[in-house]
Length: 261
Length: 309
Ligand SMILES: Nc1ncnc2c1ncn2[C@@H]1O[C@H](COP(=O)(O)OP(=O)(O)OP(=O)(O)O)[C@@H](O)[C@H]1O
Ligand SMILES: [Mg+2]
Image (cartoon, rainbow over all chains, first blue to last red; front, side, top):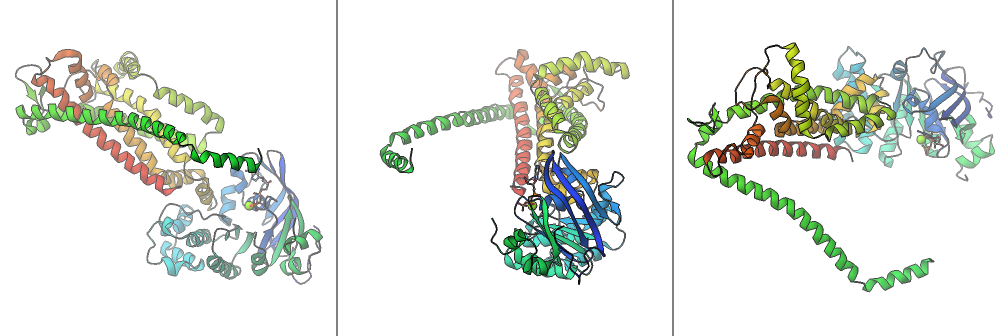
């Protein structure tokens, strides 16, 4: 790591996930190169960096979503609750129940709005009132008021921004420990984006959030910690304020101020 | 060429109307070709309608559609089409029971579990199977499936509906497998990932997300296969025989609508007579049934194309 951990916000003490020398390869070609940083509990950590620097690849390694891409190998350790997520004895299905994910493009199931939210808890044997869980999840995702009268209509009838909030509701219904978000606002207009940013603020008290974003203002506005990657390497990691106002590294400064290239 | 000279050439092309003429000729040629198939279809409908009309001057529709005896060639004649419809239904039903589960299972395996290598081997084989002439399948049924069945059920007839159903099932299986595989493979990867990210197992993702999402394509493949089974001729004639029969078992010989058409076309009936006209009413009935099924599957397919594009 190039940065010195900030004094006021201990970075490693209350971490929920720790990346230790994580390297990720696509058929032997390196995409993430010995990245280490902690992800603090009940905080928002943002990952920023130029296109193709390995943000999505790194994010997917946090809940074993790289398993679905042929030829991917992961070196180093991603520990969650003291366990190496990539250990051979770990069940990836269990990992994904605890560490949820929201994708760049909204991907609701072609089912009703209600079923989109209820499906995950359903297959995982949720026993209490499903109606309550669906309402609560949709409320948390700030979508309830807009859809409460049309819960049984197809999710595909929603607008893009509503679909994305539905996908967030779907992830929240699983009551995950950690929520991973890969550019969740990139397909959305400023109003929907503002909705979702407000939402992330509220969710922070109950969830740990890791968000990949290309939007510097967004990272600065919502995140507590920021990791800056470039060509697979972690250039700087620290408290967001510091990264954006007093970056230690020349490259970081150029990137966050837009003089990148 | 520099941009400037290219633009100059383009400008000088503005006056070349001849290229438009060539285009016009090609367009009309293509249009004519399309017209041929349309005219053929219309001609078939007219002929079927005309012969069918004069048939119904002699035989009441009630006798034809509700009668249970089909004896068009011997006295006393009887023109109840139900035995033929029943024969077709029996074979089609049996074929569907065999082909739908196995075909869907193969499609699921191919699209969700098979490696690219396995896929690249299995898919061409399936397409090859679909191209084997149907008479070969019929021969296969008669010389291989029937003796096998005889070993299991000793009192089964030489020509029997079961053998016909099995062979037609085998024939339409590749069609269900490839078309359903196409439908399932068209389900976006992002949908699967969304499901996996909720802690689903691959079984749950397949059965509860991928298959429902591709369901209209899958259903369309079933309907097309059924309509193919209804229209299938040579294999069933060879395997199931030519005895119009409303039998409640699969062990007896039956006659399907198509098998009857073959029998008459081969010259059992004098041209112009009423027995000859039955050819056209039975063919007309077959035409209407398969047309309805095809239109239905087209409708379903169109709906599914709307969902993802
Ligand atoms: N499925 C894949 N197969 C092979 N290489 C891949 C694959 N996905 C990504 N890569 C490569 O890995 C590197 C990192 O890709 P990744 O998608 O993680 O970048 P990113 O930072 O998320 O970019 P963006 O901001 O454009 O989303 C890139 O060089 C990319 O070409
Ligand atoms: Mg990305």
